[in-house]
Image (cartoon, rainbow over all chains, first blue to last red; front, side, top):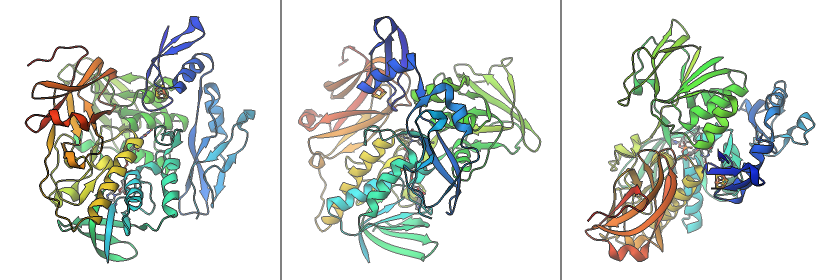
Length: 116
Length: 426
Ligand SMILES: Cc1cc2nc3c(=O)[nH]c(=O)nc-3n(C[C@H](O)[C@H](O)[C@H](O)COP(=O)(O)OP(=O)(O)OC[C@H]3O[C@@H](n4cnc5c(N)ncnc54)[C@H](O)[C@@H]3O)c2cc1C
Ligand code: SF4
């Protein structure tokens, strides 16, 4: 039995995961917690957020995130991909800034709409 | 020009209040925001974790604000940005200074205060030692990094384990800095559990509970910080010093609701929340002036800010639409703090303003397991709610049904947190 804190939402439920019984989860406030408990012990993943340089607007940084969670072990390699990137306004929330990170089928996308 | 509702502050609280006021029927609604863009603190909170309750999906701060800014753009709600509100008079005239329009004097039928909060600074906590560069509040560091794109430091120590500090520990690590640790005076963290897991544990950043910084050393820039363990009275224990070589110290030692305007206007302030005392519809002690979001009490979940602000917006619109009607002195009851409860919002309730129930928000004074939240009046228990885990960093919400109001004695109920199953003492 392993005790975990669910990080899927800010409620932070205290989960108990039974590794011997198919990673069954108790203590979760919603179904997403069960999914998290299972995944965290088998293949932990995270969504990464950061910023890239922005040109053509009064603001100079554009916030971005990974369009889906990526394996924890790939976090720093993914971050390195953002180093030389420059986005250009106008940008819309959801626009792809870096496609197919590390061949994972996940993109870095804009998280803010900036018109100019 | 007379506005039905003027909202002071364009963060998530102000956005939700304005939208809801308009939906409730207020015709002329205006938002005054001192920054050049709407969204408030969410613009610098680029991490994800917003909106799971409200939108049922996990958004970043800018995305969460963006949803409301987008909705606002399809309405006739007016926005004046770059406008700093300086004064609010009891007859609801707002004085503001606008970058583009100069000095403004605006009459409102109802007002919503949504100014958010600010960070406690080093001055507020007094650390001995020199005063070199390199000491920032965590929120200021977040602004420099996420909005202005500066790298704040290379070897970082964080004082305080509030959410902003935890979020910045991860953020600086991802940007290549070495975060040496997070130092917390209390034996528990005030940050959300999920942030301790995904911001510290994920990156092997140690959390020093019951520790504090006892000295900052350095000439021009921070060079070292001395950390000591503290006893149960929070006094440093000699001989427990650890010296860290660092160039940057971030302070994440709490937030204070921004209430200069409210105080100036003579609004009653609760010295526990440091925000206005509010009624069930978020009206303050000044009739027609409402308040919501971090200006009322510090929230850790923006979803709750939105819900609370919708209530304020609705209340403000109703007040504006019926301002001709005398409100009269309606019956009310107070909500008092019992065992282990630090404060409640609202503090007072008028039953004839309540639909089916009133939601009560509060924080506990310590970390607890297996507790029961009780609402009592005159020694009688009216309602109880079980909780497996409670902590000061996690705001609690309970729902008090109107059907039970008839049992209230002496115009007051008490909210307390006791061991589950404990007998009521008469
Ligand atoms: C670092 C950090 C991390 C957080 N992380 C999360 C999270 O992961 N998940 C989550 O759900 N919540 C999180 N929160 C909480 C949430 O973001 C806040 O509770 C919420 O933003 C508060 O909204 P607000 O509108 O009350 O205040 P603010 O966002 O601070 O907005 C107040 C606005 O009022 C304006 N203003 C102030 N005074 C005046 C004046 N005199 N005249 C004109 N305008 C004025 C300000 O410029 C500002 O735009 C976090 C908060 C912080 C600080
Ligand atoms: S189990 Fe559900 S409610 Fe609990 S923290 Fe996880 S996502 Fe949130």
